[in-house]
Structures are given as structure tokens and as C-alpha cells.
Image (cartoon, rainbow, N blue to C red; front, side, top):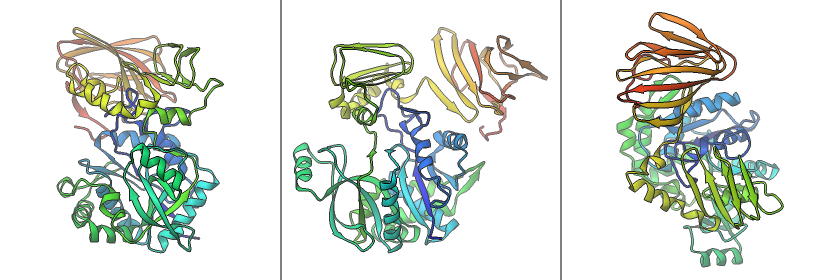
Amino acid sequence: MKTKIIPVIMAGGKGTRLWPLSRASAPKQFIQFVGDRTLFQATLSRVSDPALYEAPVVITNEDFRFLVAEQARELGIRLSGILLEPVARNTAPAVAAAAAFAASRFGEDAILQVLASDHEIVADEGYFGAIRIARETALAGKLVTFGITPTEPATGYGYIEIGEALETGACKVRRFVEKPALAEAEHMLAAGGFAWNSGIFMFTAGQVLKEMAAFAPEVDRAARAAVAKTSGDLDFTRLDAEAFSASPDISVDYAIMEKTANAAVVPSSFTWSDLGSWDAVWKLGTRDAAGNVATGKATLVNTKNSLVMSRTSHLAVQGLDGVAVIASEDAVYVGRLDESQNVGALVKQLAAARATAALTETHPTSYRPWGGYTSVLNGDRFQVKRLFVSPGKKLSLQKHHHRSEHWICVKGTAEVTIGDEVRIVRENESVYIPQGEVHRLANPGKITLEMIEVQTGSYLGEDDIIRITDEFGRG
């Protein structure tokens, strides 16, 4: 059997280019845009063939660790490890740490495929053919990237100029080109011999560490030290904070790919998008006869070539062409699809204003290792939330200094601990938790438990919580 590939999935990004659905605390890789899976789950599925792949290694951060574990569990996919970055340091330190981790577990000859968790890819025979070529090229000592055949003069992607062919079916990299202006992108498309830089890589663990040592020694030293001093935490592996923080903030492209003489590219024609804008989401969606992509509750009249998505309210769109209308629980974005690359600038403006900063950071729905909650209504001295608890999960045994809580069961069966008493609460039943009382909520059933929680008190912040016992290791 040929050497299996170890997927290294980068899942720590906090981008907000698909605002208002994505936020710093709820990035796009963990959101369902279309279908019944998140982008991260779709990525896991692409690397789930045991004949080709070992169990994946996922690199993420403290905020997303339980999301990663839970979304992998939902698919029944085992992970080789979940590495937690203590601080964000771009892709080169993350890749170096993953390579050092994989080398210690699988050996330096282990083949790594580094891939983002938030790309949309059609994994057809063309895709897996490119994977096989990349594997053979990586075994020959090359650092391989995947170059996507351009379909338009896109300015949101970097480009690769393709050099002479190699025996494996890959090609040498002649040069990397930064995200170009439109005129340059049009020139490259007309000239031919250029590909979009997909940000997907393949190489052996030993080879990429060797290149890091040669061209980015500070990154190499920091990553190796961070892995050498890792600590375990439940199912997670924490990289040492002091060592990892010493690394420069630099991408893989800048650190090694643009400097090495061993860079190779696999020209690829499979369908790929980094979903970096609402325009990209529209292009990949299933369009109706008028060119519209609509999800959720929406009515479109005399509207064409538009993207309409709603998570809550019913959207009625009339007489528009080429627009994005996106409604989350607490915000609505309306803009031209051909200007959607500029959403980041809008988000920066929102983040700079005190009145709107929270809209860029937190989402009304927050996920926890036991499930999560959605904020429904906030008022003076009261707050209403919808809690959802996964089967077999339970919240921490806890108490609050400044609030009391009313819980109403609307779906499933709840096991509620109040002081020394444990009781079962069924649908349409309620229970009251006095201020300062020790309590816990658990789901002993086989379906997701849904509760309406009404909080009342002088302070309703999430930090008014004293955890007494917690199965997820939170203080």
C-alpha cells in the first residue's frame, strides 16, 4: 500500500468577509451555508477515505475547540489530534507546528496535505487525480501547491506562473504573483500559463521542516519548541504559549514557498472557491431561471442574478439585479454582488463604532461543548434565551450571584439539578432556579433538548457564573 496522507486542516481563522452570518466568534467554516453540513464538515468528509488518508490533524484555537470536536463527532470521523494555537501567528507557524507534531507521531516521511477548513471544493475524479499526482511529487522531495485553472480574471486570488513539467505530472513553479489589479489579471488570463493559488499544499513533514529551518529559522525554532512543550487537555493538545508566541507572524507563501527551489504546482481544473465573498457564494449556488440563489424564507419578484439568504425574517425582494441580501438574527446586509469583496471594509467601520462593534464579534447563537444558546430578547433586568443541549450532554454544575432563571422545556426531556434535588422536566413543564442556588441542566434523552430560559436580575452577563464541576475542564 502506498503511503497514506495525513490531512492538516487549518480551522482557526476568524474572518468576517461573509458578514453578517460569519463573525469573529462564529467564522464561516463552522456555518451551514447550503446543504446540511458546515464547510468544516465538508472538508472532513473529503479526507475521510481510509484507503488514502490517515485521521486528520486539526489546528484551531481555544474559542473553537469544542466546535471542532463536536462537528467531527457528528460525522463519526476520528481525529489524530486537535492542536490549539495559543495566539494567532498566520499559516507558517501553524504548518510548522503541525509538521513537527506529525513527524513525532508518524515519522518525518509522513506526507501532509495542508488545507483550509472553509473552502468549497467538488471532490470529483479530477480532484483525486490531482491529489495522487501531488503525493508522488511530495515523495520526490517537492513542496507542492495546487493551481486552479482560472475561469475569470479574479482579483481576490493570488496567481502562480506554471513552469516546465516534472516527471510526476506536476510542474515547477516559475513565480508567485500577489493579488493583481484587474488589468494584470486579464493579461495573465489572456497569456495563459497562470493558475489561481488555492492555498492547498502537500509535502513530507521532514521536507517542510527542513525548508522552514533554511528560510524561516525563527518559525522553525518556535514551532518545534511549542510542540516539544505541549500539554494535554481532554482530547486537545495545547501548544506551549511562550514558545509559539515567539514565532514571526508570516504566511507559508512568504516564509518558504516563494523562496524555495523545490516548489511545484499541480495544475488542477476541479471546482474550487475560497468563499471569500457573497459573490463567490452566489456563483457556487444553485440558481433559478432568473439567476437567483435563495435560501431560507424569501420571496423574489422581478429580481435576477441575486443572492438572498435569511436565517430569521421573511425577505421580500423586488425589482433588483445583482444584489446580495443577507439576514442573520440581528443584522441585515444589502449590497451589490460585484462589490461584495469590500464587505471587510464595512465590517471594520462597524467594529470601530461602539454601538455596532458587538455585531462584528459575537453572534446571537453561541456554541458550547454541550450544545449552545440563541439570544432571543434583551431588556432591562431580563433576558430570554433558547438553549439547545445535545443528547447525553450536560452543563456544568453552577450558580449565579446576580440572577435567577426560569426554564421551560419545549422539546425533549430535561434532567434538572437544583440544590440536592434532581428532577425530570418534560415538554410544556417549567422549573425555577433561585438566585445563588447550585443547579445543572442535562439531556438524558436521544434527541436534542430545547429549553427557553428567562433570566431576571441586576446583572445578566455571561461572566456571572461559578462552575463547581464541569466535565469539559472549564474553570
